[in-house]
Length: 396
Ligand code: AMP
Ligand code: MG
Image (tube, rainbow, N blue to C red; front, side, top):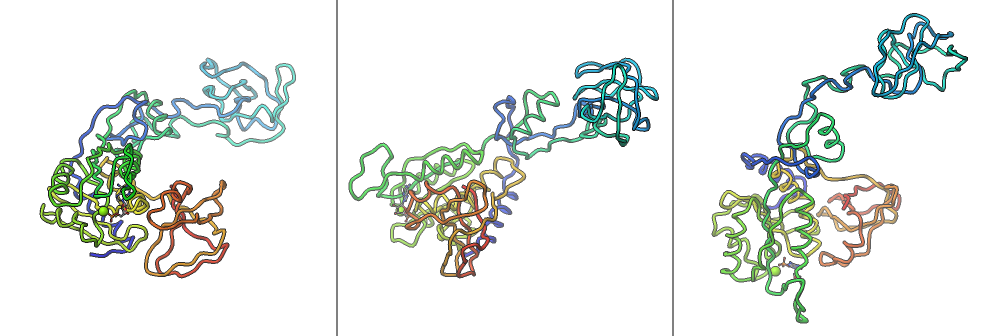
């Protein structure tokens, strides 16, 4: 089955969401929870802010009293409570973060006042409610502040600390088997013969899997024969997800699909109209999802990023999966033969406004990918772009 990019991505999201079953969870200390997916609902332990909190250094007053001259009756700093109350014509000097005294309904910024002895002059008028945050305005006690399925980043972890959590329930990282294939492939630490290639895909995939929240497990290199490939695929299918690299093209020794078919695999697609990465395979076998990623390094990296990554994230319990896309202006003209959606190595400028294609020699060009900080994403049916045209960019 051949699918367009959109169809193939939608298929991966749909099938993995429907098929991922009940995911295991574990308790994780807060500092180790960065990048993990929350497996519980978090509620506010009290109102936020817990008291009407001044947002400025200034004076707590009654808005109806200004413009005018007010009597300073006291002071309140952060970490204290003012014991009295602000009556008509009164003002309490207040610091950012301090609780608004009873009777006051606004804070006037110190910059907008003039202090004369124990009087304070306010020349402008102010609205009731200005310059403080009412109790509970950000979150009410008991309300949900984070739901299961959220990836924990710095702001989410700040929120967890704020509500008093030192430990959270997170989904277990999915175990992702990485299976390189090819008679020409040797390990990175080996000195290759002239006709051999070092295994780089297992390394890029490991990093991509870990970045997506998975736990990568690299298997030995499968050789391009039935027994070796079958044995290692069977081993790979004991993980939560199997990622193969290579062996899915039309070559005489590309036997990955045959082995999977013999293992009772169901194939959702085996070709996608993208470049690099056209002969991409996605399916299930022995109740596990697998991807057969084409072995050219750029194909493996790109197809992982735009298809397999979402599967790792979903198997990790994530509810939101998205591509980090933006629009930028092309620095120079671009042409393509229509039919495929292309992901081309590119440089996005520091301010994100323009994008320049990197010179590249095709799907085997790891150098170009390493220089790039992004991919240009072409529309499959368009033939050319002029310099200055807007184009979609996928961040690397
Ligand atoms: P294949 O998809 O098996 O036809 O491989 C396509 C190209 O990618 C060939 O030139 C392979 O040598 C290369 N290749 C396959 N697997 C790897 C790997 N693990 N690391 C680096 N290059 C690879
Ligand atoms: Mg091969």
